[in-house]
Length: 402
Image 1 (tube, helix red, strand yellow):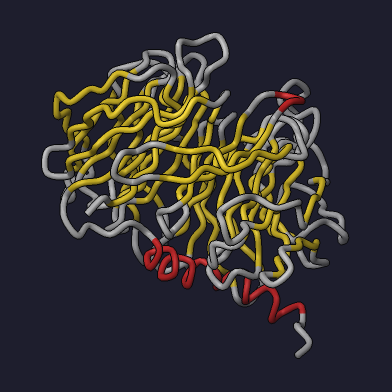
Image 2 (cartoon, one colour; image 1 turned 180 degrees about the horizontal axis):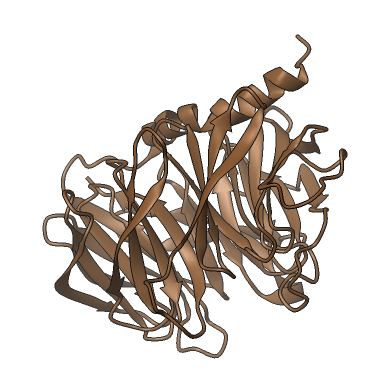
């Protein structure tokens, strides 16, 4: 059946609705209260040797170290396969950047290298899996390229099936936006579109994904904007942000009606709504992720919506805090409700545990992971006193061990 432009737009806009339900089906479920936590780190100019494993007790929020899971260079992003048998890692090392496949022993937390391949770009910073678990998608930051690699039956990575260069009008910041910088990539729930947050282009680009072949193609479709200027007709289907925003990561509402884009450079969250009448994402709000009166350097880093859909969290590097927003369920708009220190420096990443009871902030420059209890009624972060030590933590992922 031929896909019309309207059908294509509606499929893309409706994607997050199914995205939540399908993501939930493969997300770790709490059959008990014990989880394995794998922590990715930076090893260059630090004491780190690679990926570290912890036991996580969801009753207390405590991390108990299990030791080094795998020695590997600069594993800045870690993803666990839905089967629990494998883990996939980006090794962020400039022109020598790789992606690595590991066999995972979920009980011991040990990782055994299966194979590694060039990432086909410089400094990969994000890796995700398609909904079938058959392909790995990688965003290469410095080169602004995205690539797809098949996952073979034994867990190894095969030769790439797609390699594309992000293109478009560059943002106004000559130092940070001198070229495309792919920072995040995820697939829609129906496995037909790949979303790519590109910091250099001030856009969330959308590519068509073939789940049988693992290929990516650009779509000739309209581009959503904030009325900030003209958009070339041949631009990839995308959601455009205000100049200099520097989109880093993206989150979707539970019902799929809203897309939340974190701007690293301006420390903002831009909310896009599904606009059926105009057939594209429509920007409805941009809100600061910094508390009133803040001054000084800051780079926003991570964005996560709580499983109950009521609260949205972002991290601030410089302000060294977690910002909390209340989500208006019908309008999708945000209200800033608080800002909580992470107890360390440079919280590049944070994770909400699978039960939704705790938020774990990884303070990269303080070599700590600090656990906070989440108040589901107010969204506030309450320190638990549980602090784990690990050198240069920058990514944390959970998997159930019961």
